[in-house]
Amino acid sequence: MKYQDLPELNSNIESFFKKLEKQRVAIFLDYDGTLTPIVSRPEDAKITPEMKAAVHELSTLIPVAVISGRDRKDVSQMVGLDNLIYSGSHGFDTKGPDFEYQHEAGVKCLPEFDAAEKALKQSLSAIDNAKVERKLFAIAIHYRNVSENEVAKVEALVNEIYHKYDCLKKTGGKKIIELKPDIDWHKGKALLWLLEKLDLKKSEILPVYIGDDVTDEDAFKVLPEVDGIGILVGDHEMSTTANYRLDEVPHVKNFLQQLIDFYKAK
Image 1: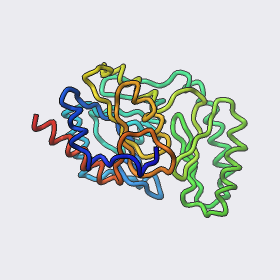
Image 2: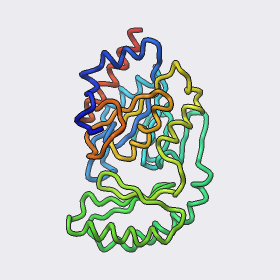
Image 3: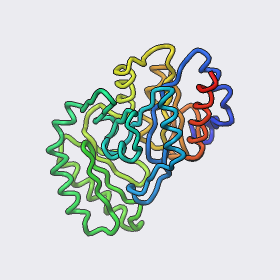
Image 4: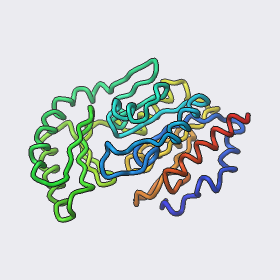
């Protein structure tokens, strides 16, 4: 489905809340583009005090997890709330208040990531504003600030390097190329794993995932398996399997606040 064809959530909130008459939400959130706007430099993606307060208050009422492409330690520091569950590197590295999990097959790939990171930094150093960001289980190559006539060169150099490593696969996003373990594991698999781990895979639980990018489609696609709901924030210009849309980050905060008000009124 196209983004513009999705029902806008805040305009259809009554039909959403009807689902909660017999179910309780467990909410899963992306970070960049969902809790914060997309910015030129990833380190500048700061969560606002208002959004942080809403996420914190909601987490006292229902289960809340953040599933991000960022490194798990990075996203947990950016959000800054100790009582949440954080799953970084697209689900390869997950930590809750009383558990920790790293994907075993992903751990075996780490030496190849170390070698590829070194090669990419050396190869892309001559291209202005190309940034290589190492995460524990991924390497992100940011080209948002690279001049248009250099983007193809960035892509060619990344392709040349990643083909040398059997353990890596290449994916894309908003002005980003990512190298991840070539393993059948992603945000959707991480979501299903968390539902099992937290004993939330029940008919009375409604899993809700909110994300903005192509990588979040992996989560949207598994939600029918658990009768969940996907919410796409903004248009990533690809077809989507989400159920609703929110047009921008402030609308995410508005929705979270409506959830808080709903549960506090019960």
